[in-house]
Length: 112
Length: 114
Image 1 (tube, rainbow over the protein chains, first blue to last red):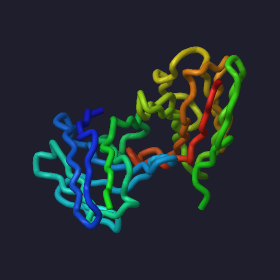
Image 2 (spheres, rainbow over the protein chains, first blue to last red):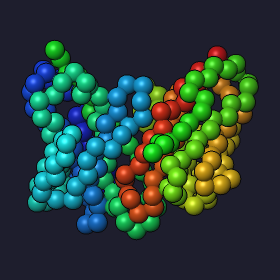
Image 3 (cartoon, helix red, strand yellow):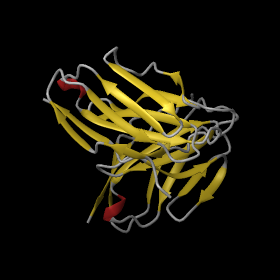
Image 4 (cartoon, rainbow over the protein chains, first blue to last red):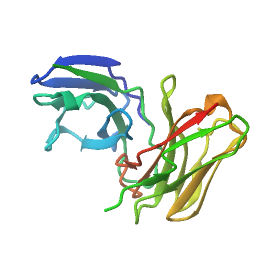
């Protein structure tokens, strides 16, 4: 599985846009990029997945450059409730079962 | 729809006692994962099953840990004997094979061994 590198922590004020970048230099052709969000005292939850260019849903946007060696999770106008740990994973969504492992994640603290 | 259901939510036990954590995956999911989370080590994958068969247990810390999946709707993680360093949150997660990294977590079992 491709290894990922993300910042350990980030701070942001309420109302700002937050961008968290993940590096995955060894991403394979079939790999997708998936982001999870974990609130304190809860299990991680899936927020967005993409393969290339841009993906947007009601929670976030995911930007993936042409070389796919990195990706950026964008959270628009964060609120205090967005304080969480954000994990970036890469792997193939097809081809049967796979070992889903998490890195250290990025701890986002939203400040009033 | 019911999500992944774990029990107990919280357990405090004495060192040396046996601990059994339970998990009911989402109906229809055929992959099941057990994770352990601590401040020091983060979120570690202990073992995962596919179609009730253990595929990779390389994350199981030692022989005191064992996991079973007797059927598609139930799995257990057992620690015998328990030690204080086993104190952690244990998460169960499930997914559909082929869904890649899209897995669904339970709320966790908070274990304290004193």
